[in-house]
Image 1 (cartoon, rainbow, N blue to C red):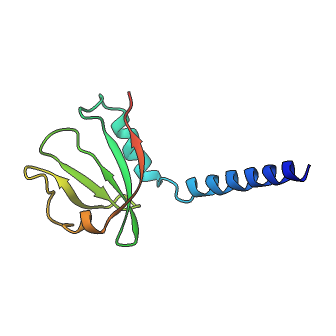
Image 2: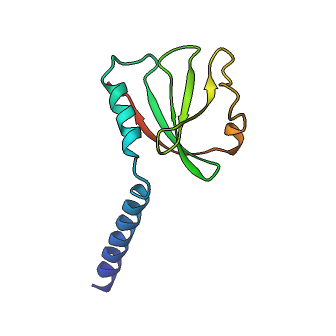
Image 3: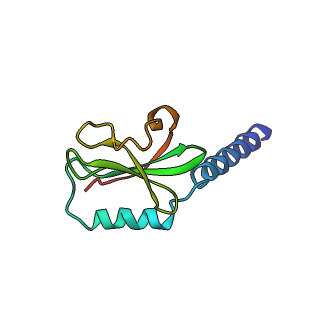
Length: 115
């Protein structure tokens, strides 16, 4: 009986810990609005995706571009465009955050268009 209680307690503890980790940072409403705007368009090729990063101690969101030779834009939590760390003709972005690849830590895939 004690073994069953221990297992049950650990299960509850683990599920609440995992749930807190997933909810620790919600998608800002303006980022969700940008995602909804992309979702209203025909599917991109390659499919659109949004990734969350920690960059300079701030949560930022990298949006893929709809096609070739276009910048992949990075936005702050309030949807201020920060820079384009990748994409464009050179593939190296617009040069305004050249240290992104070295400093940024990918946290999660926020959304990918799976239509």
